Length: 258
Ligand code: IPE
Ligand code: IPE
Ligand code: MG
Image (tube, rainbow, N blue to C red):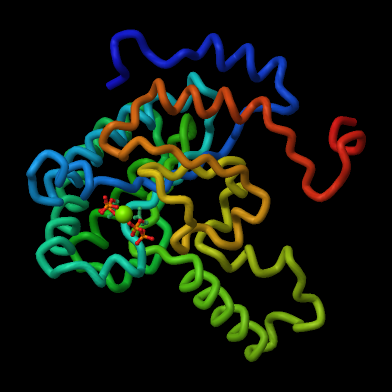
């Protein structure tokens, strides 16, 4: 649910019109800081993960008004298995419950859900719920929500390379034709545009193995807010700021403004 006053979409629309370029079509978010949020309240880390999960709906629902067609969120990394068994089990149970609870709203609100990452390491029940949610939302097109679950950028590139090598070995792909358009066709994100903007909450200024290939030319925004406190209003403010940034993609200003 959006807060009563809602995000400042008028200001965002104005910034889009005046800005150096259109607003972000694809925003990716590293949702960090749940543990610290809970700890600062003297509560267990899982309490923070539950509060963080509740924030997701508000941000997804803000997307259409802000012109964000694709939203990708980092929910669990290939490195997060290093956490205690109880935190990992709690997170997996949260993902199962969240999908079950939110499925109907997502379908009704026109959200198309996809998952990226290596789902084979996840438990069978969770994999089934993920497959089902992808299937029941497949006809939606208002917002494309991608959830990165057991996702690691290096793992994704390694898996893509393995499949590419298998195609070469089987004679389906000529190695001489492999270029920078070929590899992304093997990535989990092959149907998505690259993210225009990557946001990380909680004050950490690192990428933590998120969308390594895809974010080559993304704009980054690091905010101190912990994920459970991240609101639609803060989101709208970041998007407004993005509209004023000049993206050059290696060219010089005159070329990018034509
Ligand atoms: C992000 O919050 C959620 C996951 C990585 C699953 P953290 O759990 O990393 O929270 P901090 O960084 O410890 O505060
Ligand atoms: C990145 O956060 C992963 C997710 C948000 C799911 P981490 O908390 O795992 O990252 P590090 O360990 O601080 O780099
Ligand atoms: Mg963290």
